[in-house]
Length: 191
Image 1 (cartoon, helix red, strand yellow):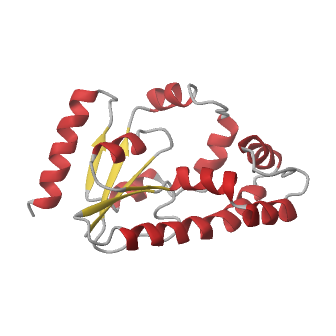
Image 2 (tube, rainbow, N blue to C red; image 1 turned 90 degrees about the horizontal axis):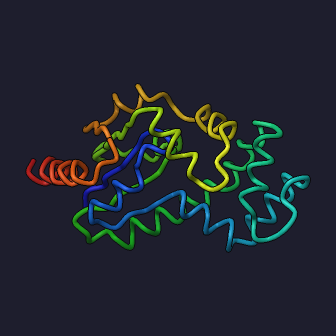
């Protein structure tokens, strides 16, 4: 099984590209959302750590955002609680799909959380900064301050590019993305 990891800036189109590849996808952001909506134990840990912000279950994104905006140290507290649960779900996903030809790991903090394996096929996706911000503004609850705080916990784009086997520019055009998908599959499977 080939592990394809998609990395890049927030809003560059990692998830869209991941879904187009046609392999099982582990989407860390979706798993975090599920944890906030369904995991009472995590909610209790968050309440204990951030009692002024986490008031009820399910954990609301707005509560998380307020905690991050109030104090950037809260982001570290949140990740310390949530990331181990996400990692468990990822390992379960990998085991479940171990017989597949390939899987896709759509994990924003792939390098930061030390998920990288030597044989992973890492694809770095980038887009124009103006296009990214334009697209992020369309997201419900987008906040530039939170975006900037999240960027601070990420490794540099240069680091990610240097560790990637393939670098893709996303211009958010369906036709060119189809060509990119074809190129990626040819590159990975014809080696």
